[in-house]
Image (cartoon, rainbow, N blue to C red; front, side, top):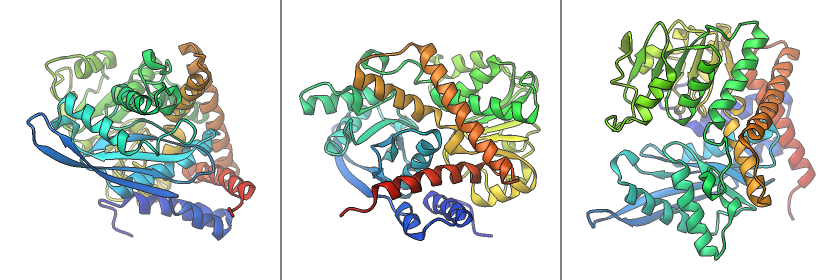
Length: 424
């Protein structure tokens, strides 16, 4: 089998496309168009640091196709690569198709380590990156949002910079903004809540009661923390959590709200890590977390963490992919053989872009919804999407939810290409 350590996420995405394209016998001319992003913008820009020296940062923005307005987050990480951003834009195209949003996929990234930067330096990086993309971002054609290591704060800076350049406030140019600046209620929890809705539907289909199911969450950032909090509220038992520094385990389950406060509201926890939390049975590594005897494993951090080298160790009945691309093709084959139900990323974590769409609609209309309305609409869309994917997988006599999700999305994308044709 192909080497999977540090697998290029773009190659992984194309393998997933080609697999489903072959199954559906998709026109090769359309597959060619999906294998290439429409445009890749790469920029190098200077920033004056707090100590007066000038650093050059590299940023990317990728549009996967342009059948519809482009939508996708911006991440800050020292590990950002062009290939990663290309893959994330690709997955966003399929994610939007699977939940029926009028978007094509985009993604952005800046190579930097936010943990080593001051707030002022982060603001300068964000505003200068926005300046470099001032003719790219647009409420009608490219709408960014938060991703790894970005939040409502960075979106406020993007919104302000773009609006100052345009001479008017453009509520629709970015989503994930603070509510006070036209953001949507329910946006912060949306991705984690969406993972919860999909997981709940899977448990119901399998006849497993929510009460008492055991869960391990890899990644306790925005997605993982909200997923853990919401599913714990509904009776599940979160027994293991890990992040970039390490992991913790408690066989009796955590008080997730207390853990959340320790990580995000404790001024002494400068690293914002679960490590150091005292109410545990033992400390564990990320690799140990993947092999725990739990009902549900939720990878909610980065790509390619479940590979052919550790997939045999997975004992969970369900994998809920809160992250983008956490499972490699080699791992998928092993998990399928071992009857592990994988809830794929393009379905499971689509809650974030769905509520971003709600925010975009509200901002453009200048008419805002209650949080109850937002969550109710999100539940309706996620439930409908799950049911369609599960039924497709069942009709094909397979439990391969990833193939089913890609198949449904690909059929919709093919229709878009057929309707638009090729200009000129």
